[in-house]
Image (cartoon, rainbow, N blue to C red):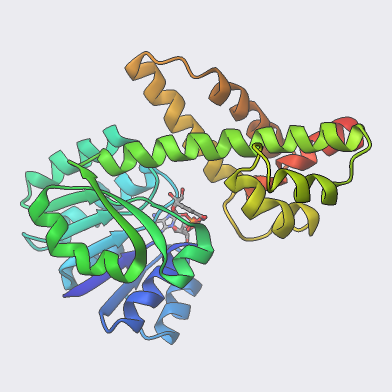
Length: 291
Ligand code: NAD
């Protein structure tokens, strides 16, 4: 099985490396040429375009910033759909809306291509260690066909249901992550203003009911270290909350917490922190309160 990997960013690069280490022939493409060169140095076969890569492989994985970019890569000029063989399986591991994946899967089916969603959780460290949680939306046959690939990339592999199912649960998960992080930022600020040290809050809340993944993964590594490079970008978390708000309109489900959290990430973006780790929202409160 030859694998094509499109999108060699924070997540894509370590995932592609793990596939090479597992013995797969991996073809790699990214709009950033340096990323392709770096992957060639790690044993991948570089491609000049997504279409060129598509013509060479049996399975195509993409890990791209958003649905608009995914659609462009799949159906635009020199696209994947126009160049891949019949029977190719395309696995979108980006975080996008369930409805956009369903639309892509319909277009793919007309060309004899299988298109499935498999978004992930676990961050860059999970991608590097091959311990991601992978949430798959696919028919049974396609899922079984590509399961060995998921086994290389992740530890917890869930076949959620039909196409779009993986995207749906990822969207719900990231609604919680985004709200939890925004809540942690304001809670820490209030605590500091009330005279508590961040160290004390970390120690006590870590063993109390306010604990969250945001606290475990973000407080010490990013907030207390006062460094926000790497990790999961503010822009990406903002995008994921937007997916939930879009779905809330379609499904008529009010999401007041999500709507409020989006404004926190919007404020961080306005401050020029879009590429920083999502935990940099604490700096919005620092600026507002001097805490
Ligand atoms: P990233 O911005 O680091 O990487 C995206 C890559 O896509 C970049 O290398 C970029 O050059 C490339 N790209 C953009 N347009 C392209 C195009 N037209 N053709 C080919 N390549 C193109 O983003 P990331 O953090 O790796 O995230 C990728 C996806 O995974 C996103 O959908 C994100 O929401 C999701 N995700 C990220 C994390 C995380 O912790 N970073 C965790 C879970 C899920």
